[in-house]
Image (cartoon, rainbow, N blue to C red):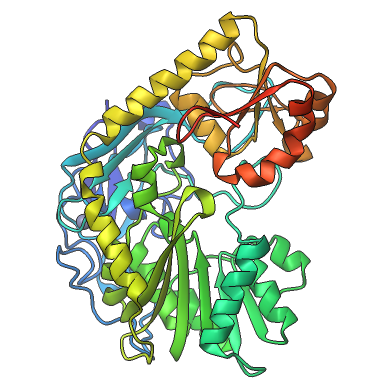
Length: 494
Ligand SMILES: [Zn+2]
């Protein structure tokens, strides 16, 4: 049970204190203005819109025209805009519950799904480590702006890169990257003087294709495949302030790519404003996000994360884009990652005509509105069914192994209460994860080779959206009699 935070103001700083927690030593590092407590503008006791920067807190998307070409207000939400600086002297290890919408400031009354108290899904944990801390994961729907969102967990940031992280690869690769690239090149006709920027480029399949065509490219975000491929990279946080610096150093881009970036942003407006800031007047912003409609349609409870703050629809994206001086002119639903939404946007005065895809996705979302009601009940039934299925196989003496030590799998195992009793090991191709444990379920992660050498009765393929890529690796097992299964969107033998 959380104590009610107490706000005190001194020296121009507003301090949020949770009574009683100091005695527990629960002081979080980095809880300064730019740090963990920034989102606590919406914590209990801070519910009144207006603590955010002017125009960003009030319902109705009354944001200023930050996206107009040449906009240059640095540091949205920074002290210079009149918002008080928030610091924290203490935080709770439990989640600080969001009671107001992070987008429009309205009170949140409606639950989409409450998954309860779960460990963070993003890290493989060492053997012998203490139990993983658990945090509430509760997705709510805003009745005013329709944004689906979860509360912040102090200190949780998107996990990227390699090592013990379990992040899924949200980069685009293979034939789809080629098709996407060809479509963009046809639309933009970039030349040697063009610049393509990708934000959050942990894969850069698109950037590398533009680079191979002799077009100047720049990645912003975490180092990874892009850096290894020789793509120039700007590291560090990307927001409205740093976007200005990027624009000064490199110029604005004809094409800005942002794949799975917006859902992880604490502040959608700030990131959208940053994207608008680095886009040339006639340029195109191409966004891809996991599509809320696909989550609802397929009961994807494994898609929810503590570090994914929002679950987006075209309806919400269009609101956000318009608030920063952009507009969507094309949209399509694509199969990536269990169902994603790909949107092309430009400045309000940009030359791009609206394509039929925008209307088609709007209609699809409108027809899916009934899926919100009862989503939690449908997921609860699916969780029970999966748990029962695995327990039955275990009690029948079958040896069951999972494949894919990634965040989706971690979420599914913990949501269904699966442990080593039901699944003896999780096979994974990444050696950095071997010898560690899945968070929460504490199931050991092993090399795929060890499973191939000792075939189990059943293999549960956890990253089911990547079935086509995973199946070839497991075909030797199937030929030896192992049964291969997916558990979502429904239990199915493959
Ligand atoms: Zn809202």
